[in-house]
Length: 211
Image 1 (cartoon, helix red, strand yellow):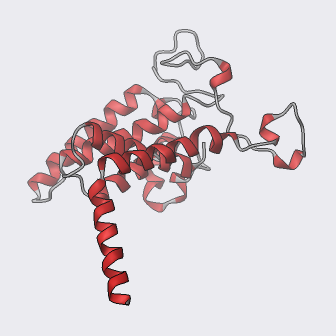
Image 2 (cartoon, one colour):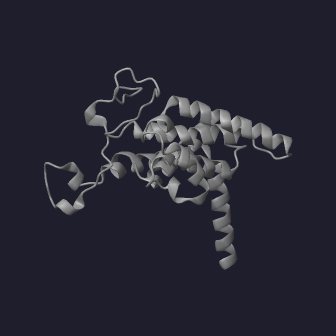
Image 3 (cartoon, helix red, strand yellow):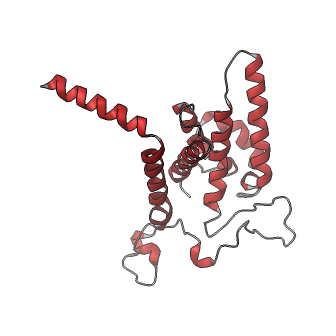
């Protein structure tokens, strides 16, 4: 999937986790941004990914490029190691007098995991149980029927072709990006009402002043 699609998915995951765990009142906005950014990290094993176009992630890519794409970085093992690294970072920062709350750990981990969950719906799939692949192939945590797997390929240039759905619509946007945006909107509406109240009061104050 595209990098921006993963960032949207990571943001949705962060919002849902915060709402489900009752952390909406104590989670700083930066944690949601971190969740969206963490959703790009599994693709450090892909040279053309959005994550690899940043200088800060270049050293990580030099190591992860030795793994097959959607292998180690797209596994349950990677999620566990990533969460452990965050906890160690949290403890180290605490000794230096910096605050790195549990909210960040939860949301950033959720953002990373959201990338893998999203790629499970692709045609290619992920090696979720890496390095355990007894059948020598990629397989799923949930056996998704082939009809439910989303193609990220959009081929508008081929013209109208009633037998090629990808020539008619952008399936990644239709079946994934737009639903994720709907989840973000619904979560904010039902669990972040204070944001709407602040916005409404600010707008009313502006309109009153303008008069």
